Image (cartoon, rainbow, N blue to C red; front, top):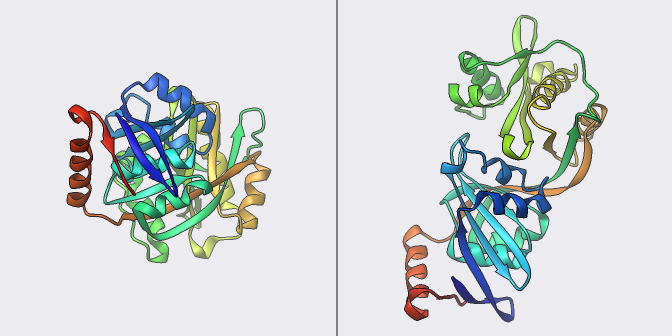
Length: 294
């Protein structure tokens, strides 16, 4: 479908489609491989049914928005030029609540559609088999049967978590035991086997046991396990968290760019969005063209 849209003070034409071509999507996302790693993981056979991909072409430039569910919740991943991302979100804003993963240039486009409970600029770091420097301290794999222990640990600071057995079984989680209790853990946000990249995350240490290197040990164990399955592992870290950055660099991770992570809630109701899309289609010839004014 072609759209006549207003972006800022200029009017332009954008072609927006929902894409079901996983190969073409994978080829396009390679240009944003590290920032859009989560979207690449949604191209795996088991994750694909829970994802919707939209592509926007403006001239020779192409943007992608991926709305996905499953795993630990709803997510929206953005890739490509900001004007194309904005055009997609005008018609396909996704879930009422979502976790947005984007590049800094996408913030204005996101703010047109969402309000944020919390938005953070993060460093993206990468490790490969060639650069990995493992920490050889002892850690143990976490299984689905350990879900209650993991939830108890993640809840140590009063933020409730609701991991289920399948979250742990489908991902890759390793923990560290100290004083006969689980005190640190690291895990995954997603594993994209078809494009050989994984996103490490959910790193946490009980407040009483911080400063002992346990998070580094758990992160090293997860990294080692992931690099047996994929070629590259990425993670996100707060640029103000110097100790964590230092620890990741010692493991062989290096900086590859900045991303935005945000808990987001849509401004418009689902009904308003549906009405807007219906009205836009009516304005086009034979219902094939959508015209959107913003």
